[in-house]
Length: 311
Ligand code: NAD
Ligand code: UDP
Image 1: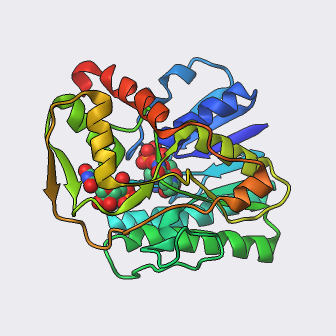
Image 2: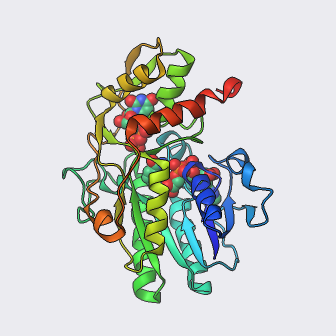
């Protein structure tokens, strides 16, 4: 098949492109390089089945494709809050443009949604049936509400125009090719530990997250795209839950770093707990994560350690 990956030069997108190329597909990687970069996809560039397109999904584009993975959107709070209006435009106008393309060429489209649609959840762990607890006017809402509207658009194009859609709600994912300046907790802690700098825990570190290794996540994305029972939404994430303080201690121990753990103010609206209920993914896709946290973290630490002077 010919497959479009928007946000394909980003962290998850580049791993997805790699997997789709391995599966024998032609891959069109579309990106505006806001948080992604050419080096993430440099090793695929020579191949005849890979094409890189510099484009912003807030503008329409005409292509002939069989599948669309819509991943384009900055995912780190630091980056999505840098230009919040642009973040909403990317989520809303981007989804409209990609749905318009899917409708025109009769392609199946998968939307990368997020656990952030559950906001600061009052139900724990979070099943897909939970409608969420999102602040609509806070500093995270450009992302959270943007993704919620993208889900709404997927469902409305599906009901109104018969577009073949899939929605996945991705929980915190980590791995090689996260940007050094990404700003999310996994890359921040590893980079700080490898540099011997203080490790900055926001708040008292009692808030929790559940971390999924990128290869597991990508496998879930492909299974959902090729599953005949759409449209979802389906949660994809690793149910193993950690407090951020425990996580900081684990990074110190795995890197053998001399870094101290220090505390900084908790950002506004930071969710207190997050853990996916993946019963639906297990049942529908036969999917569950296979890579334990310590193994995934070791691979990620190795990746950052090899960056040398770029770290
Ligand atoms: P990332 O920031 O590494 O990748 C996003 C990519 O989208 C980048 O390459 C960026 O340049 C590109 N992009 C941004 N705006 C664009 C635009 N207007 N037009 C074209 N390209 C644009 O983030 P990621 O972690 O790889 O996340 C990928 C997707 O998965 C995002 O949609 C994100 O919301 C979703 N997601 C990720 C996580 C996670 O933990 N990594 C969790 C939930 C959801
Ligand atoms: N966090 C932290 N130190 C950092 C970066 C993040 O303590 O240097 C915390 C953050 O406050 C949040 C958790 O780690 O509670 C996960 O943050 P991240 O930005 O990775 O993702 P999200 O909040 O979107 O889940």
